[in-house]
Length: 371
Ligand SMILES: Nc1nc2c(c(=O)[nH]1)N[C@H]1C(S)=C(S)[C@@H](COP(=O)(O)O)O[C@H]1N2
Ligand SMILES: [Mo]
Image (cartoon, rainbow, N blue to C red):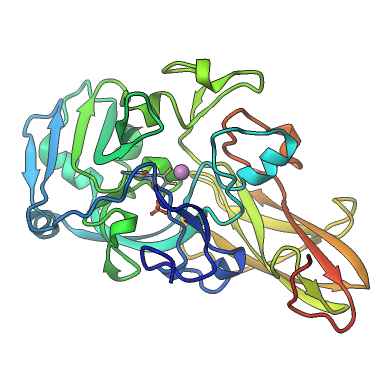
């Protein structure tokens, strides 16, 4: 077994800090990603925190600062469940790297996205108890894990605007798929910001601070920002570029495995689509001829506003190489950009281009990976 109770077959980008993604087929198994396949993205060493002595501090511009044990958090606030997909801003960076190199960033494939049922207290309820002052505009999260990629090394943190923080769906979560939150996923307590990039869902949460400004933590002020194509990230200081928060519409193909071999005839294709904050998935199109003609996939019933929606379709393939593409449309009538070249950016974030799958279709060959 891979470290941190992950299954064999995970693609491990780094052992330390631990960064691993499942093969996309594993993401097609169940709508709720099994815990041993859920991607794990860490900027520092995973801390082992004793839940018994751990405390959560709520401070900053509030009338009543709080200091809560896990037991107090669980007993004083209503328990909520949200099914939410977590997606790293670096998901599918590998396709952007093929356009132009992105030094110093992991080449994540299509597996830096997973879905779980999260249980916790609503951040809105906890903030209400603390009594935020009128000038509060951002809610900042601080964690103890230290990232070596910053100079000097800095603990991980980030923030979200007050409007999102009080929207109800943002959780302080202690359980994942019905189990206590595993250490690799932020146990004993993490933030879950549904519909926003994974980086805002701060793990091993220790402190919530209400402020008038966004967090000045490196991962809010410097990293996770969309820089213009010509920018040199090493020369971009705090506040450069566009701060990433809400996710944009995307979809991808999960099965069959990319690069595998299938026999000629009907092949079932499965994927997911995920709409941005406040929108829903309206349609998914699939094309066998690079987008000249499209057919519509069947969408599974949505499980809620914050989770991916599976789609499936059967295509008939004849012998040869097959390149299949998929694109989603949302309830506002917008769709995804076609190719990674159109949205390449220096840090390799937010690749929401058409899902792509290459298959080799040959008689007698099934399940084998192309060399
Ligand atoms: N404390 C802390 N929180 C963190 C991170 C981190 O390195 N440290 N990584 C973030 C990023 S970039 C992502 S994509 C998600 C990944 O969550 P997961 O490892 O549970 O999949 O956690 C976020 N929260
Ligand atoms: Mo991320």
